[in-house]
Image (cartoon, rainbow, N blue to C red; front, side, top):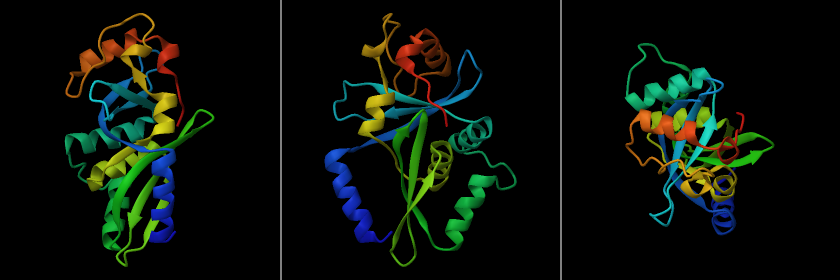
Amino acid sequence: MTADEVKAQSTRGESEDRKIPAEVHGLMMEPNSNQPIVILRLHERDPEESSVVPIWIGIFEAGAIQLAIEGRDPGRPMTHDLLKNALDLVGAEVIEVVVRAIEGNTFLAVVELVERTGEHRLLDARPSDAIALALRAGAPLFVRQSVADLARVKQSDQSDGAGDTPTAGADEKKMKKWLEELDPKALGKYEM
């Protein structure tokens, strides 16, 4: 895809389905299935809106994300480190990662790259892999409005009034308690 095509697609997408800036808030184990969940905190236009998007991921991807969050060196390159090193070697840079859609029960993401020549490329990716790469590359993370509308969890979504949504920097115990107290119907479960 050329830079002009990316720009045209981005311009169309912004007006129809804007990108919401997001950050990795943390990782959790889902209490019932013991499956890892990456928690994305959305930076909404209205600072009073506090919402997160939970995405169920695989154990290996969770490990890769956790290493990047903690800034730990695994000693030998893991798959996401290898990909980042290969991109560096060929002069490509990760511009951004966007969780772009949910099809069925599956989240979809895209990694935008810029080549040494200035040409932009889009790579389809699983959100967990894209997030692990974005963290290593220091690239921004976004969630499309349409995805947020389907998957976000807000305090107002809780049917039992189970406390405030944890804010950025909340400790793991508070986040775990909050997730455990959520009505499962409000949380939704999406597969990778």
